[in-house]
Image 1 (spheres, rainbow, N blue to C red):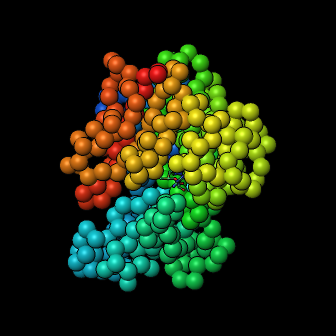
Image 2: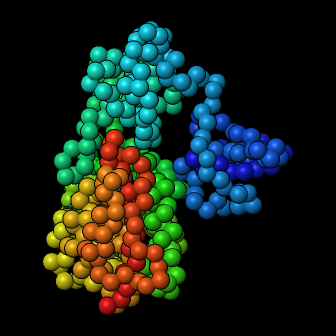
Image 3: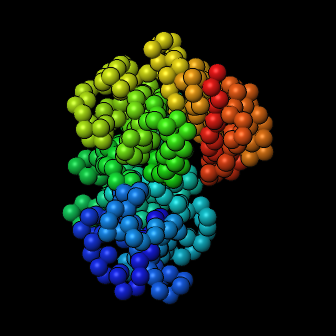
Length: 390
Ligand SMILES: C[S@@+](CC[C@H](N)C(=O)[O-])C[C@H]1O[C@@H](n2cnc3c(N)ncnc32)[C@H](O)[C@@H]1O
């Protein structure tokens, strides 16, 4: 979590200013800095990437946030009161200790052996996190569209916690998530979206800026697995970074949310109903498409300076069908994510290089960097490849 490093004497004033703008992370604590002269104020994920005046005189630092302890934030303490200390100890690490926040929803994954405790898990999580409206059990990502199967298991209804017969009125999963100064409409029941990829998106932003510097002009970006469009949210927020953009996805519901998002981010009148990929504006190609077939459209081939490949379980296999989209009249870049077992990272690096055209000499070769665990053996990795002109 980003924190603003402010002198001790300026904490109150900055807290007020940040709170007024909605940039103060709710439920998180202000921390002491090791130098004793500063404090670290937790920033909401929706706060701008580059903090404007009057905050720009302070450094932003990344460190793990700490929950405000006026409510006992340890859900296990609440759980122990609901199921008993012995049960908590008996199932040890099987209890769902991690969770993902998407706006005012919390997503947990409950192991099969703990299914009977689902209501107590939901209640304990809601007690520990007073800003949460709805707790959902993640039953895994389904099919090619990578949609999560999410079941509501607990909700706050008029101040009461309910774990049974959750009314539809509080069960809606369509929410606005604030990230890097933008509001992203998403519905994890209908289209893939993960808040855990914010740092990945910031890394893509910094690579895109490097490419702009190399080309000395706004770049054209192609995001053919765009989902609801979070990568574009970050890129479009940077002035003069993006010239032309292609955003497409196979899932019509993802495209519906994307259109809603683009209408706000791009301030243009996008249609509201999803449609097959088409040139909506002279510099915007948007719609439903199978990414592997984009290269059959000659107007899209050889056009894009940056191609984002975000289907990590198939990235390497799909690279040959995406490479023709690159603009090979100048340096270009492929930015991708890959799921691979740790022992096979070396082989995967070689496979990526074989699937790509000539790389730019003197710049680092594509090399998978582990971002996090996907399972006990698989790792979620990312890479970027700088492609030389033809
Ligand atoms: C892992 S998600 C990434 C979504 C988005 N880029 C993000 O970061 O949130 C992969 C996306 O690829 C889409 N998809 C799967 N197969 C596809 C294909 N053949 N062509 C286009 N999109 C596809 C899915 O619908 C899903 O939205």
